Length: 197
Image 1 (tube, rainbow, N blue to C red):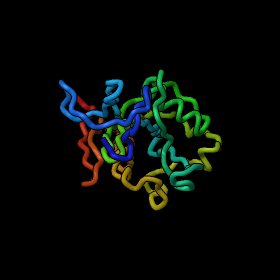
Image 2: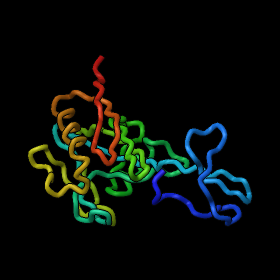
Image 3: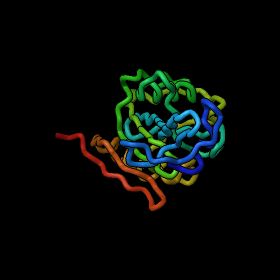
């Protein structure tokens, strides 16, 4: 559990919390000695939507911090009461006005981002045409870019470049995969598993 995310006080009684080993758990948990409540803190889940048409990916220029003005892909946090696919479709629509059915969101990458306690699920969706988007508060501009034309030098998240490169390879060769791994202080470590039988 990251120190930056650790609660200090019990949300039920207001008493100070301490880390305590709880019977049956491998790791210490935040525990309230006053009301005896165990506070479990778990990773937050983020989703991203990679739309593609031919050999082009749909990029957006961020309109808000962090990384305002830099280029990325529609992404955000999963809300309670929605599936991962619904979250990816919702984020895409909120940021760009583009509507894609959740069932058209196909899983492509699962990452554990350990230093900030996040799980990151990336979906892909094929488009028959280069869809038109809207600029919004979250999106200053957008574009459909081939690998050669992509805004690599203006990426919002440099550590996602290996993933984006792999997605370009997949759409160029029509050879898709599921990618799983982690990002931590030692770097970016992922393994790709082909979806071919």
